Image (tube, rainbow, N blue to C red):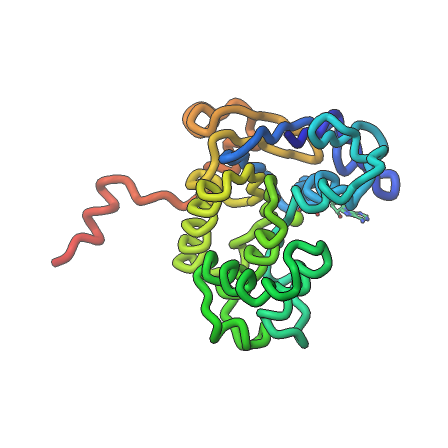
Length: 258
Ligand SMILES: Nc1ncnc2c1ncn2[C@@H]1O[C@H](COP(=O)(O)OP(=O)(O)O)[C@@H](O)[C@H]1O
Ligand SMILES: [Mg+2]
């Protein structure tokens, strides 16, 4: 289990996270975290990965406090992150196959001899082939680069996957395909996922529960269907109303074939 308890993060006198608590149980599971830009979503993600130390509060991994962990290796493998493609998480000079192999090597995941087969299996798992493995990141589409980022995360056989706006840089059709892929992987690898998005539609596809972050505070949290049907907080309503829905019946008739 991965748990945030009362996390408070302060940057330059501003409270970026204010007593945030959430729980990721064992997978397969999906928790959505929604909030407007600047609400603190990425900061929370970085806390869960141990990349930002909170001023107050703790992150617990299987009950152990991250700030006091003496053997962090199991945690570092178990919790992985996939970020938005535009952040350039792939080395532009490294072929895709090498980039995946690098992760395996850094964590001594497989014996050297078994590496090529494992790289091929990981790429196949995200829908890529040996032909893609030989390419450089700029020779791939945005969707394919996200597949590589997912393969690199899966290479460490994680239990928890933090997805920080994983499809925000992609066209809607590609976005749907990547979300479909993540849904399949979540089931097959029994992953417990925190899916971060400013887009409620993305979370709707994927999550059992949803938490709403506003100015560093969780203002609403609950089962997805409850929160969507009866949002209690204005921030949730704003996010819900920002999503373009299918037009109501009278409007739809205008698009009917003539
Ligand atoms: N390292 C940092 N130094 C100073 N301010 C930061 C830092 N990281 C985040 N912030 C500020 O914290 C707030 C939340 O940022 P972020 O967590 O990236 O939000 P989100 O991902 O929801 O857009 C923003 O106001 C941002 O400017
Ligand atoms: Mg962010």
